[in-house]
Length: 86
Image (cartoon, rainbow, N blue to C red; front, side, top):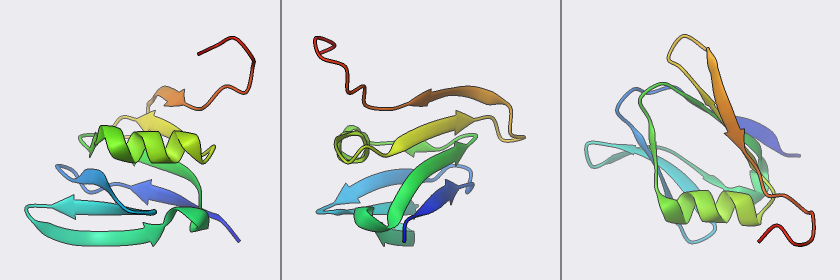
């Protein structure tokens, strides 16, 4: 069963390692999860997402939601399945 991944640690970075996404900060790993276990990624505030991590999530059809530190909605990223959108 897939579950949402909430990234709330300010100053952290979401990265990719193979088929896993990692939350890292100052050289240490705070969390790591196989992409097959993730239904959605919700990012709060000052969190960076690497391009490889974003590409993996979108390729797997996993939506990324961007929120302020207090939860104000900024937007969301998802892969469109419509033809001709590339």
